[in-house]
Image 1 (tube, rainbow, N blue to C red):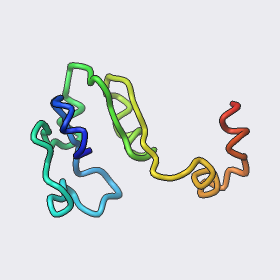
Image 2 (spheres, rainbow, N blue to C red; image 1 turned 60 degrees about the horizontal axis):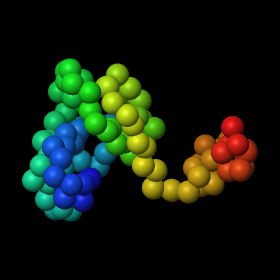
Image 3 (tube, rainbow, N blue to C red; image 1 turned 90 degrees about the horizontal axis):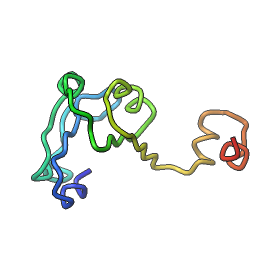
Length: 99
């Protein structure tokens, strides 16, 4: 997320989501991008203008923002094979992609 700041677009970074080790942006890891606003989910849900792009990092995040308007990208920091194994799906990546 920090590196997206170089694009020059205004960014809303949603903090306070479930399953995080911290409730806010951890500035010990990296500074808040200059173009970013740190907001909570309820603030984002009040937005009436569609987002240009919504980036999520897991399925829970994706479900949390389901009512927001705008195209979505989900970034999974794992392989498809690992994800299917974690889910116990029994489906091979080749079969999952073919669906």
